[in-house]
Image (cartoon, rainbow, N blue to C red; front, side, top):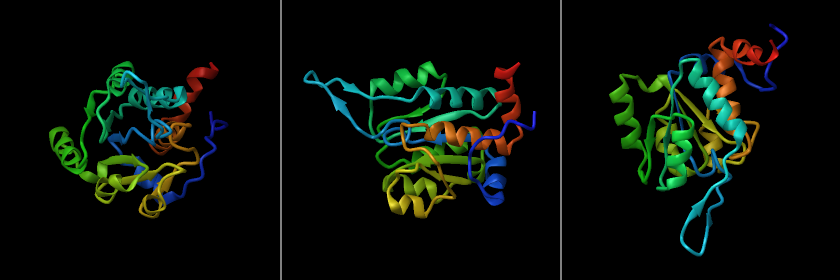
Length: 184
């Protein structure tokens, strides 16, 4: 099914980095959400997640690449979204995200170059500088974009998660199978 090609602009170097990925990690606020925080009078926090990001995560996991979350905030909403998407590796309340990242890599027996991380703000840079594929969402802080291997065409909470999932699927030779499933 060679007619199936994502509309991603990506160079060969980035494709080579994505081909090595065995774990994809996301920040949450500003990456899987727009970054806006909706807090009601009762203190309840609400976030909006994009359904296409969720489906991209499912397709990537189905191809054998697990997904995890490392976020500085703690939210029941994130816990529910992770459960809904069967995301097993969830680290919340990690203001300094790097120790959680290093511990997870060690726990899973992965080298740092086998992990991709998607971020949007400067607090994500310590991981991004030590990961195999550092990804910035389209509306990330300029310093984050400067240090990313690749920037998604979509904004945080508006399809950026799907962009990186499709990039990894493409680089690892699973894109046609993942998409072709819906055309048969």
